Image (tube, rainbow, N blue to C red; front, side, top):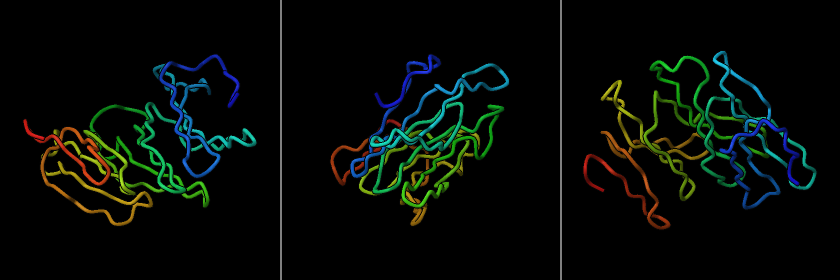
Length: 173
């Protein structure tokens, strides 16, 4: 048993094991934390599979783990609070399990899509609120080497094989 159930878990729990360490990134509502609208919030924990010791990383209305790149676990969280448009409502972040550092890779009102591939985080920023913000960009998990790859609306990203990324823009892949 990794962690004993608390009874507050929803069915959208996520486990993302590190390929190189005895750590698992775990997203659940087991903490029974709620926002002002009584909505159950998700927690992101790192669990050491040898000791079952947990390290708390984040609480949010929604957390999605993209995966691991070396010592970095990469995730997207929706900022808690008012859901009105905000340039930092969605936050791509990463946590270094060796140093304990958390970095913000990118923020946007909304990310249309995001993937972790080949040591980079690729993300498509939505341009509904601000069409000039729409872009496809990439960054290393430590938030270095941020590069814009395409200016314009990208709706979806797919890793088609190692080293190849496809994206949907308009009606074309």
